[in-house]
Length: 395
Image 1 (cartoon, rainbow, N blue to C red):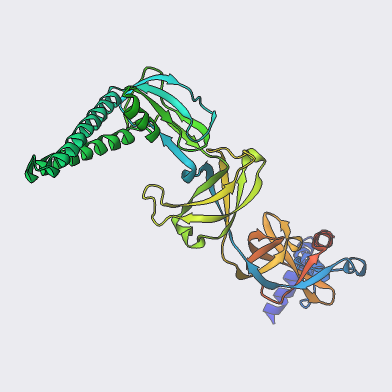
Image 2 (tube, rainbow, N blue to C red; image 1 turned 180 degrees about the vertical axis):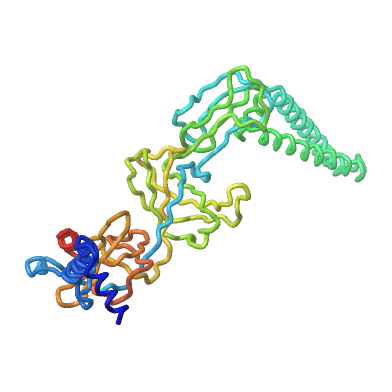
């Protein structure tokens, strides 16, 4: 009883100013709780998906849909190359004898005909060969007359059969030596008509011509007047440029994509990247150990003369077609450096779906990942649909 009375007394005697201080925290807590209840969202109210958009009727009428499908697609391999001479239409002209150049007729870039004289040179070797031919021919004529005389004498029993045989052998040997001397003149570049004239006149000519073996253009000249040349030297290079090659080096990792007969396109920057069409006529059988590439080439018509050897070019090689999933270019939405397409989800709703795309082919893009065959894709109006999505997200 005394303790209860004491507590009541203490409360009664506590200063009145202490009660507000005790009640203030309770009031603040109650106020915060009321605010939290007012601002709390219902648990069953989900946040809208920013990748999904609902198309208004007006916009829906502008959209066109197609199911994602597979089509035959040929991968295009682009490799750097150049325009080059057709080596089957290229001739390296040299001298057939040792000598000193006395006259030059062909200039760089000049068109020449087959058989045209490009240069002349003085050759002691040619003189010596002509002299040997004349001696052999003279000896052959002498031995022929001796053989004919021996045949007459043998018929009248003046000489023996052994003597007739000896003179016959001498004629046959001299005939063989004459033929060898004539062949040597041919090797030295003297035509048969000149050899016949030499046999008739006996006049030795030490001037040897350098003659073009094909019709074409002089693309290289590696000789000057007064220069001493040998048969191993290339004096002129003549090219027939009505057809040229386009050559390129294909990396070994992509060699399996190229085969002879494949259709290729050639882009030449000097011709404003005009596309020239050809076919692969050669695929190398060996790998270049330094560049790890394989040589390929195609043949191009150049009757108009626009293609110049050493021009830079790009070769676009189409591989065998394979079935690939594709979407039209118009269906692709580019945003934040990524590619997307809209997939229909029913009830006028469409989802912006990220896709990984491959190269372009005939107005389509190959789909590497992101969608599957049969997905309903927006192929027209995707840009406007994405604007609608962005506006809705902003609101």
